[in-house]
Length: 326
Image (tube, rainbow, N blue to C red; front, side):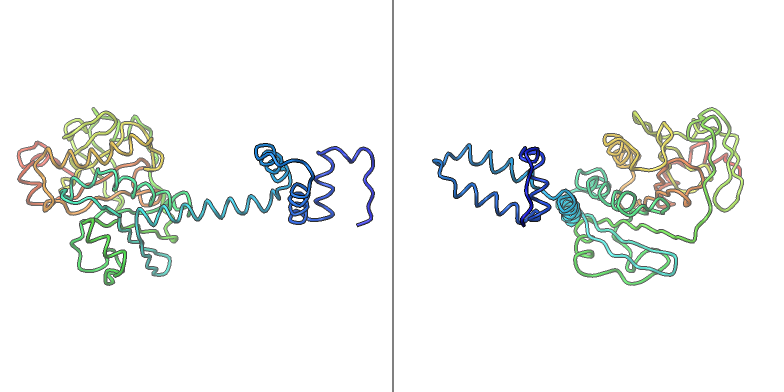
């Protein structure tokens, strides 16, 4: 374009940016390729490839490359999600209900056994990452349900979706419902560990539930303990409901904050606790996890709701069933 380069502009570090400003990155690439192909030297593949790679790397457009990498990463995540689950979202004012169907291709296992399968764990991890990390959702109610509901679960009560979502649900035997509500402003109680019933194993139970009801008992969490693994404990519900409550042994608020092996251990605890206490697929109603404003106490806890008859049959002689007062 009639612009001269001074002696100090002939170094590679100064030359490429200057040429790119005159020709544009695309034009510079074409010139580099033409110069290499028209050179009179004998063609030596290793030298040619190394030279061309070096020059093309130096001539990249950082902004365009960042955009391409971002688009590529987003595309890969979307494709990974399609391999792991399908979903459909229904909105009703400030409330959203998202139904997720995990892609469980293995067959021949009970519903309880599938809960801790590698396919189920990967589907759950990917769905939680989609909620929390990609969409910034930190307040939600999550429910894992056997596919026994004739209609869409939740307050919407609409028919179940068809297509890929329903096909995967039928194949897996499970579905996952995530409920969010932007109008919720309540924050969970932030108890110190010394007073938190998930950690204060020897103190009489005392807390206030989400409805404002004060729950008290002469029993301690240790009295309610029915199963324990390395990093989790499972308790009978302090209110005497047909519910098992699983809590980590350390303070954590979200499942995505759990190390990968602890995430697996959590769901293995669900399956083992049910299996070792003689509870079968037909005895399981659903599994519930609250996060953020949907929690009463600000720590992760998972609730397994069991058929009342099966629950009483297994634990009718437990001191809690006979002696809990509230």
